[in-house]
Amino acid sequence: MATRGIRGRWMRLVGTVAVGGCVLQLGSCDPNVRTTLLSGLATTTEALTDTLIQTFFTSLAQDAAGGSGAGQTTT
Image (cartoon, rainbow, N blue to C red; front, side, top):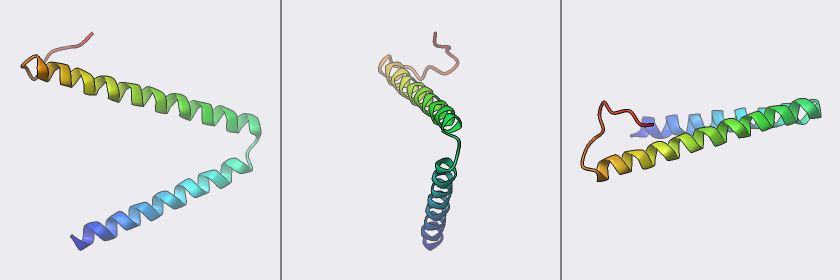
């Protein structure tokens, strides 16, 4: 249990340093490049979120129908 706590703290620290470094790098970046990068990240994040939400509700609908939906394709 103690190892998990130390590992979690380490991962949180690494994440914080990575995000902080990205913010500093984007601050000195060309505004056009920064805008392009951030709009691309926003589009990717929105698409991923939409996919996860659709998958969640599809699995709920399949569970409500009484089956696991294994092997079925959804269109």
